[in-house]
Amino acid sequence: MSRNFEFNPEMYKIVAKNVRKYRKEKNLTIDELCKYAEIKKEFLQNFELADTNMAISIYDLYKISVILNTSIDKFFIEED
Image 1 (cartoon, rainbow, N blue to C red):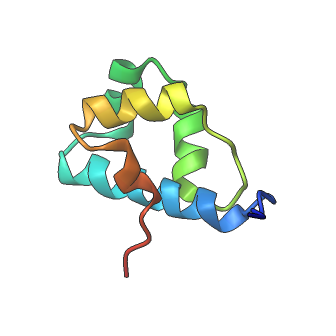
Image 2: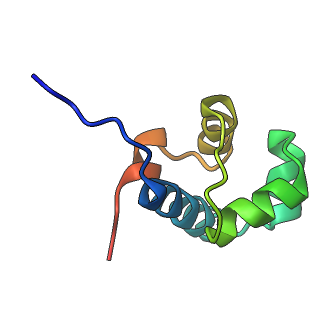
C-alpha cells in the first residue's frame, strides 16, 4: 500500500481554524490559552491566523486539547 505523506499546507489551516473555534467556544482569550498551555502568545496568534504554514508540535496541540477539553482528533476535521 502506497501512501502520500507530502506536506499539505491545508492541514495547518484546518487545525488552526479548529483551535481558534474551540478556544472561542470555551470563551478563552489567546492570552489565557497561552498562559495555561505555556505557549508564546505571538506563536499562537500567528498560528490561528492560518496565513502561514507554521508547524505546531504534537505536544503543544495535546496541551491545547486538554485545556479546551476537546479530543485532539477534532482539530483535524474539516467542517463547513
